[in-house]
Length: 349
Image (cartoon, rainbow, N blue to C red; front, side, top):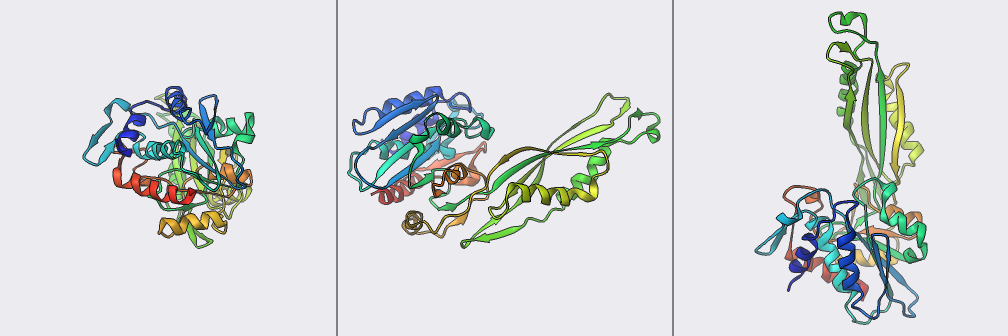
């Protein structure tokens, strides 16, 4: 059995967001085989902890869920596993489980967190569920999120701001459109303005964060013979750790100012906070050294922010290529799993 086989066992268990129960039960059963671990189930989340007398506690966390896909189509070909969740992030979960049940003595305590519903709205996150019901299970001195990073330390994370903009028009008959104002046509100018956005790059603690602005949804229309009087566009803005939510909202309002008119509305729909790099933390700096690779900034959002909110320094570090996450050809190799395991095992020792 190799780590590729261990990963295949997890990938074969479907765990699309909100349907993680079967995988949680499998993980729980495997962890309970280690008598030195205290294992607790909180909903569809599983937490296992060592409880010795060491002063330092490290939290190693990963999510159980995947984006939609067919778990039955997963396959091992040579030294590569293809299947939904192989990279994001069941390869890392397989390594976490193997190290969790390894009885080799360590000079620190470890909390292993396997949580549900990371791939959907943050409000539904299993990690927040644990934080609400059993906050003591998340206590620690430092944490890593085992998101796919190619065994590179990806520091902090960017925030994600979702905004809904409604453009107003005036209804009219499509045979006489000049008597009205087509709100959908007005979207063209706004979309062009968003398309012309030039990403802002911010350097913090030696790593770069590149902000992004994208239109992600549009809706509008009344009937085939009616000039629409309203159209809605949803925007997603990735926000570097040097800006607060209020600063990001203020900037976006100002950026859109030239294309918005009286009567248009701007509504914040969702916000997930950003997190600073924290590379000045001694243990995270040690992880960087052991990886042998220069750290980078996490341009996406991860639950590093959730730990940082709880005053626990955190970083992203896991197996697999992050550029393959959520793709139809998602895959992970044995070499990627072994590299991640080697560095993580060394760091925990």
